[in-house]
Image (cartoon, rainbow, N blue to C red):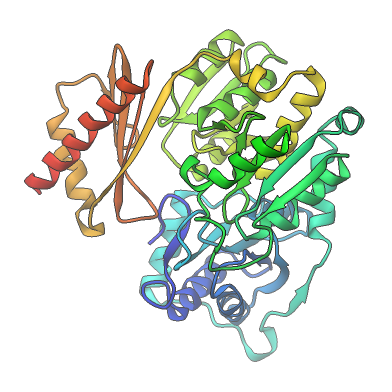
Length: 449
């Protein structure tokens, strides 16, 4: 039921009000009673599912505080500050518009552990819910100041005056979702001239697909270039990630933006620890090595990175998809915090974003999706493990094959009926060739299942 990042499905097909009701009852039964914070993004069915979540939680005796339309990291930031025992965010993050979903958060704002997910699933499937007595049904309140508090939290970690003095021009593509309620305002308050794209809330996502990958943000790249802006920023559907475009219109993809922040955060303390999934590449290893930092590898998924940060007290976490975890603010992905850090970097160093990026080692990436039916994912992985048993590999999450000239990672998606193949090399030709090798392995394994 739970995937890499919550529970997701197609609205009114496999993600239904019955599923959401009983899943919410299971959450309340295990984690309650107490106050639960809830919020949603702009997706279709968001209001419907929010009401269902409210009904399920309150039926178990939990009370609900509804933060309304806010990014996931805003809800995460507010959960401990409102004294909540848990949180539920109605979102399917970067998935296409026909999807919705929920993320379940603990009392610290971090998504619940894999163990807790399993316990919730057991309650869900057994239908053994706690039902409150008539006079102990939970209450519902609304909290309207979450964004104000959240933005002040971000600004407490950056040099506001330096940014204001730089007077940067920034184009922000908010994917027709809740990032538009946060990041444009944040950067205006930091003295930037802000131009917003796709900032009207619309769950059909008319401007672009909500995943902020290069092919989906071509309009942003073009706008940055033709308007002479200093940079562009693109969010996903729930604004926990940020992708950047430099002043030439070039997209910084994956490890690049993560590496920029990592190089500066890790350099502040020798012996720092960087937590990152096996999908991250050699650029991140290079940056960590230069800063004298240790690498701590995890399985792919923000849940795993966040929990590892909490366990180790590491200085920074990040993913190759543009998610950065900055624990002094909160140990979760936070798109607006990441945006503020990159803007601050440009202001403090007096360089263009392209100049800052040019100081990093250069690697090239290729990403491919291969359709695989949900019911065949597990058996296909077993075949992949058999096929690659004599190769130089890491099997922490999927299979990562390491060559002298680069690597590729093949793993099942936790949110879609696909396998993902990530490849990296010192040239685009090498990355493409390694990606093809990975896809051929997937297809071979499909034939054998």
